[in-house]
Length: 185
Image (tube, rainbow, N blue to C red):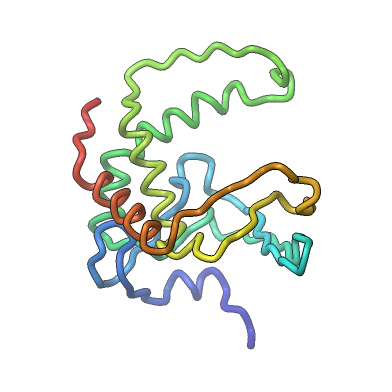
């Protein structure tokens, strides 16, 4: 079966349960991170493959669809996220971008933050996390590593994932926090 082009994917209508508010309806195109936060060009997609005792990258492809997008949020949550939290997040990324250069590697860099609202930035990060994952994303994980690392490479490192019901509750709590807390801080 031929993989649909990015244009075909964007034109298709997507429906489901919004990952933030939980309502069922039509999804809108969500850039993650926001398009103006350096997410407007090509990106690399890697698909991990786990075989007994080893992790490796199974497939790498380059996509050029005007940035990385997801169809996981309803129009209301997508618009609210961008309007309320996106601008501060984009401003932070642009500030960091000017200092993220090879000449600053292993150097101390002083960044001056003015008129940024940390809570809005945190809520944007939570929104992106919710948009790109689901309550079951970490169920049945017993091992996490970076590609190319074996269990032996990471001996002594232990990550305990909460039980399935606890993961679902935590995910819902993040969505409620994202929707309910004030953003003026």
